[in-house]
Image 1: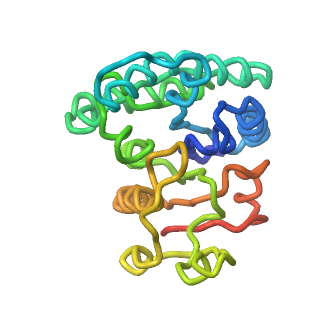
Image 2: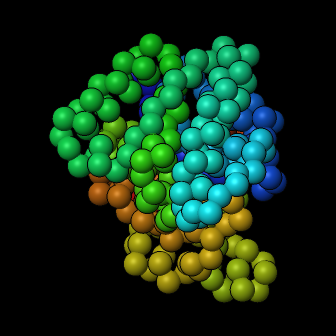
Length: 253
């Protein structure tokens, strides 16, 4: 039986559990679920959190632009983030690898082919690729997307079966319910134009991607016939619960 392939995108707010530190417990929760699912599913991860990881260790002195400082923080934090993934996953019998990509990689056919070939070899040999933007040379995702777009481009390129975007809400809420402070999840979406009207443009505390960037990501995935689920990654067991339909989340077909 061929395994289904899931691209899991984990935002900064999920990885930090909305604190100022990367949560080892959350990374362990993700690893534990992947270990349980590995006979039926193979995973590619797009992970934010490099900047949050660096902030645990350093406060940079600078006179430069904020974006330059964030790039420097990403450079410091990326090895720490990978180490935490590696240590936690290894204890669960899972192997990890690092892939740093930038948007220009998706504009050249040779680069796209190389990405596909490399990721396929890694997955075939039971290594989980952990992808992040190459933040020291590119700034787009730091400014705008918290890796949502990067996840969608990768999902489309790799023709995965499912894109799961882990965030800090139970999917996308109706605007009225959100205003009334009784959030109600939109369970199924087939018209993205209608969905856009329900979404606020506010950003989360650590991440740079509000729901708008997630809808843009879902649109990229959709054009490649990839379904997107927007799931609450703060909850324990969120992947398995979504797959078993035991939790509220938004499906964008």
